[in-house]
Every structure is written in C-alpha cells, then in structure tokens.
Image (cartoon, rainbow, N blue to C red; front, side, top):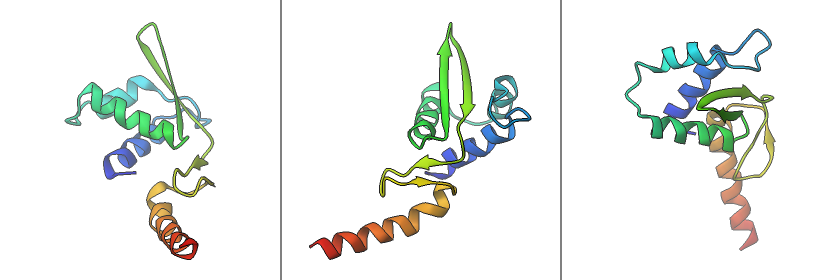
Length: 105
C-alpha cells in the first residue's frame, strides 16, 4: 500500500462513527477536498483498500457509502489474514516470500 492509500485509510478511520463501522461521507469528502486527486484516482485508492479487505464500498443512486471491515485484511502476497497496517506487514512478508522462493528452487 502506498503512502496516499495509507493516508486515505487513516482519514476513513478518523471519519467513522462511534462504533468504527460506518464512515461519515460528508466529513470524509470535506477532508479529502484539499487533495489534488480526481474522482478516478479516488476510485483507484478505494479499490485498493477494498482489495486489502479493509473497506466495503456501496454505491446506490449515485450515493457512495463506505463501511470499515474488521481490522484484518488479506495479503495478496502470503494470502494470510493480517491484523497490522500494510506498511508494517509488507516488507517482512516480501522478504519471507523471497526466501521461500529460493528454498523452492
């Protein structure tokens, strides 16, 4: 996960309701309005967060709603459910994957 995606993830978490599940989209869009990203770039960032299993995005009648999933996400490299931030997991995970690839040769 790159720095932009991770920053958006932090903003999403900050704008969640008291249960930490539903995101207040009005507050989130206000917080994101200063960013120099277009709608397509936001869609790509949200898609990446969905790929990691961190959020679910619902779009109906041109209204978007985001739900935060449990803190676990599926790592696309080791295919494990992970509880830590992707930035904390990726480097050691990729190193383990390199070592495993060497052993398998």
